[in-house]
Structures are given as C-alpha cells and as structure tokens.
Length: 99
Image 1 (tube, rainbow, N blue to C red):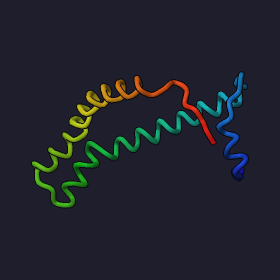
Image 2 (cartoon, rainbow, N blue to C red):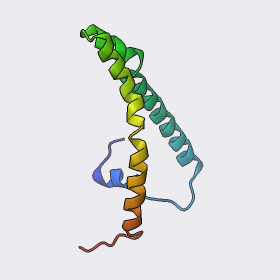
Image 3 (spheres, one colour):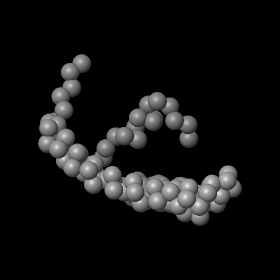
Image 4 (spheres, one colour):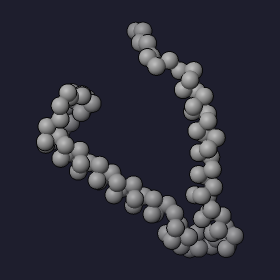
C-alpha cells in the first residue's frame, strides 16, 4: 500500500476502542521493533565491536575502552534524570498554540 500524505497522517489518529486487527498489527510492529533494537544493540557492542576494532588495528587498551563506553554512558543517565525532573516542573502541562 502506497502512503499518500493523507494516508500517512491517518496513522496518528486515535481511536476510542481498538479492534482486533489493530491490536494484531500493533503486536507485530512492536515485535519487529524489538528484533531490530536487539540486533542493533548486538552490533554496537560486544564481540562484533571488539572484532572490528581489532581488525582495524586497535590496541588492547583501545578495545577495553570501547567495551567500557557502554557502561560508562549509563552513568550519564543519573544527572540526566535530575535535569529532566527540574525542567518538567517549569514546563506547563498544557502548551498553548497560537497561529
């Protein structure tokens, strides 16, 4: 099915009650998203990243540093949590729209 601009925007419409085909389509899309996310996570870290780094001539130190980045980046989530909580207190719950 080709998506025209009208059809593409229709996917953002909400419904009061979901029908069974909508639920099945949603389950299928969430499953595909999970598979793609897992695949991307696997390729970004672990054995594949280490093998690639070794293939381009990285030292043991550089391979260890690459492996540590994923875990070190999780530490940034802690200050990020506090920043988001502070910013959300200052943002109004109902944004106004003025053309």
